[in-house]
Structures are given as C-alpha cells and as structure tokens.
Length: 57
Image (cartoon, rainbow, N blue to C red):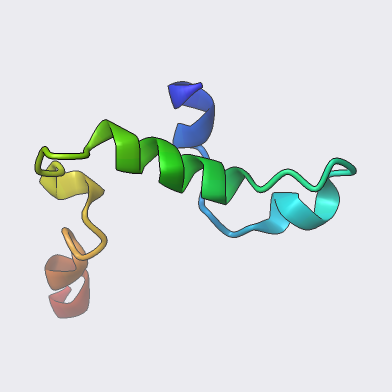
C-alpha cells in the first residue's frame, strides 16, 4: 500500500475517474497522519523542504 500511495500526487483526479468514487488522496493523507502521529516528519516529506533551492535556482 505504501508503494502505491507513494505515486499519488494528491490531485484527486482518481475520485472522478473511479466508478466507486474512491478518494486516494484522502486515504493517503489519513495514512500519513497516523504514520507520523507523535513523531516529526522527515524533511523530504515537508511541502517546503526543497522550495528554497527551486526558487533561487
């Protein structure tokens, strides 16, 4: 499951394409919430981790 959700961009495109109306982005957010609950997230998982280099480069 972790490998499959690693490819998810959280764009919510799957919700409209899926006949079961599955929202993989919400599933991924919930999974990551429980995984890192009470623990700090790694810097690579933070949304602004690499934005400094991108903006300057």
